[in-house]
Length: 327
Image 1 (cartoon, rainbow, N blue to C red):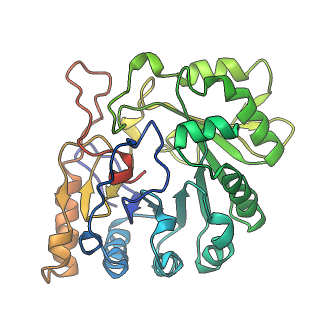
Image 2: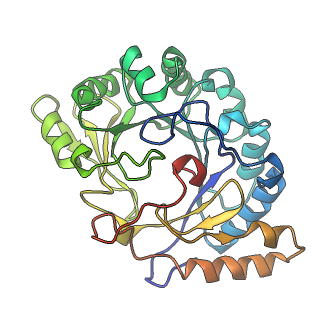
């Protein structure tokens, strides 16, 4: 099993396949300008497959394909098929904004996709536009339904809660989860936005969210599938689906972190908030053997940070935002 210097077992891989996104969410992207990585600087699907296979050989068991918006990159079903075919992959998931998932979900399911997480931060079309700068609200709702119908399990909806922006919709989202029999996960606002507009006062904590929900819905705590789960999960007492709380600011879970990330341009990040990236692309393209690449990954993993330091006085946000790093 791949381990870091703190004894944490690394079993989860996040692979970004593009930095491009057709949404420009206010808590992530700026509205000013576009600066995408050139196509030739992105890892090819063959390189992603090879690297993923090496990592699975080291103990990775879960792979999540992310972006940017991964649905924007051509040939995504081919990549999903490649990754699903790697012996040892137990969980293959996709994170998407859902703008066109409904059109391709059956193909992705047949290719081997098991789970999907769809980002949705408002259930009001006008506010959805204000947050995402996109008018694809109805398409996202359609994609959520299509994912359920295609048999992806579970279907998760991620909602970043920002005080004064969408915190008045918490109960609406819980009702939506109850009606749709899906999981809605509320995520605390993190300092990783391109406009650097994060303020601690805008963070709605997981405790506040739970306090808002509890008088109105009976929630049953769900036993974690493993010690490295990032969310505190609840099920509804009278229906399928449930609620999750992801609390990186108020209650960091760094001590149980099991992730490493590969950026679309071929860098290993050992923490979402890392200030150091490790170039794996050059090694992949220089004729290095699988063993040499594996040795490099083991060495890099030992440098994984103990935590993200959001609550420390000397905290500095990373130089790249979520869309470049991979969610």
